[in-house]
Length: 205
Image 1: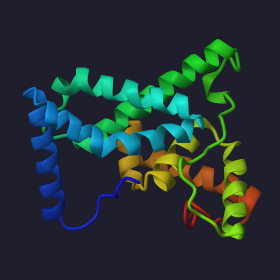
Image 2 (image 1 turned 30 degrees about the vertical axis):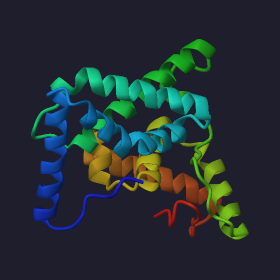
Image 3 (image 1 turned 135 degrees about the vertical axis):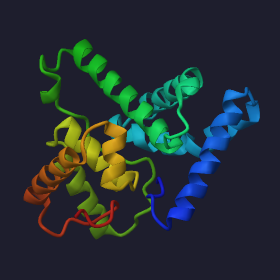
């Protein structure tokens, strides 16, 4: 799960400096640097992709495509950007493109906004408690009725652990729009599950 941006301004500045050093090394052609980036983001990207496509092979294809995209587009990475935000934005765009191809290929809907999304899932399940497992399943079922953008916000916030501002940056939409999508997603989930929605995602609030 991606660590939310928190802590002091000094800590955030140090984090950005480390990101930019890594990006510079990759731009300079250091193989070890790109391998380091893969180690940092491979599992995170897989979990992210699995939230959209609950199939291991599909998610792995997203991971592969994302790293190919990162490799070819690294020269376009700007020093004022967050490397993690940039990586997640590329992943999100690839997921959206893949969904569009999926919708077109299967003729699910003429309007992409109305496409019925696959069930939201997560790669690992370490939750043995039956009650929490049942709640998680109920939340997953409720998430089936979310629009793609609502589910994107849900996935980024509750599975990736992002702050809403980060979600806005990744989805390239305003913070106000993210808050609206977040509110509507929670309202739909609570209508199905109840006000105290808890489970593998923590408290959905």
